Length: 461
Image 1 (cartoon, rainbow, N blue to C red):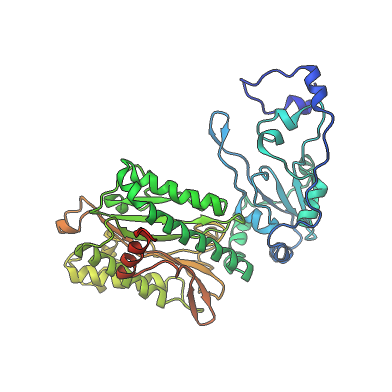
Image 2 (tube, one colour):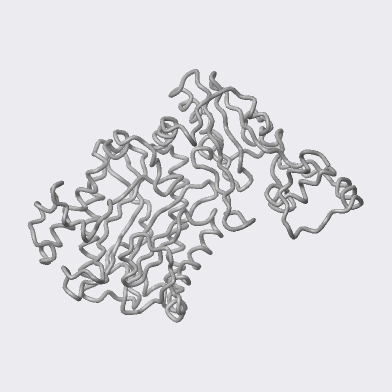
């Protein structure tokens, strides 16, 4: 047995392989090359991205790993998704990338170190190895095929150990920050990918509304909603960009409710926070809060319209040169003033909004938005002066998502408000003179939401 065969990832319940079967499996396979003219999506943008990164670290070796498989349970791994920085620099986004590493040499030359296609020989990796064998997980390109696909010089993954020292993005905070900061402004190709993700997400929300009658009948209607959206996400893209939040009633007051194990009650609201991730790994991030009866009650409408007014103010604050924090301040001001008008906030709104107070946050808590791109919370390793304390630039894509989360056990609230959670979230791209609403296909006002639901739930919808 060779050393390579000894390293096969096999299972305790795998059947033994006879010598006769091993000899048979090593012979009589026809070639099956990919198309010679195929290129990774966004190929034209990749050289410039790598050059900008190399220019940040002149004369240094940079390593950008795709990441490794993660165990879900026992010998079952989670579905693999490459690290966003690796995908951004190589265009490789598939499940066949675990363990691969892009290296930028000190002179700026990129070299991709990868695990090539398993040879059809008697060692049998191609049919015996559960992690990497193509009979188990599908075909991957060999070195020459990957070079044609990416335009990169490729080397066997085992050669990586021969390299001298360098910065590793998985362990070097400065390199990780640079990779985030270089992605803050999206090029037109990236904006188009994000628009595609948004459009598929809007269709998924329509699917959910049409499925509400079935979901309302099921004892775990939230799961039904999650599954309906997941079907659209997997059919149109790579899947969801994050775990779907399908939160009915008071579950909407849990900011990251992903258990999704509750029933639906027509007297309550459904907060749906979901996004389709494209095959190129760009994700949308949209939230709508829907009346499960098809009509908002007066108190539900009052909460909804305050959140909508806050979102309108936040969107109006978006423009090149504005502080990133301006739209959050605009959202917070409207929410605090509304809470004070209701008598919920027992100090003046202006006082609550000071850094020394912040008491309005008892009912809203989180920030009003974030950058969006390859990650749902994109560019998160960027330095504060480049992101949170920076200014907006044309080509940046972000969410505006104010919310009110009126906890069911909060005795500072009148009983009729307790247990209501409302968030409205949209995706926007900064333009030369403001911002474009990418998710305009979905209704935002209470009246438009009711009309949209009525149309989709009608027999002809």
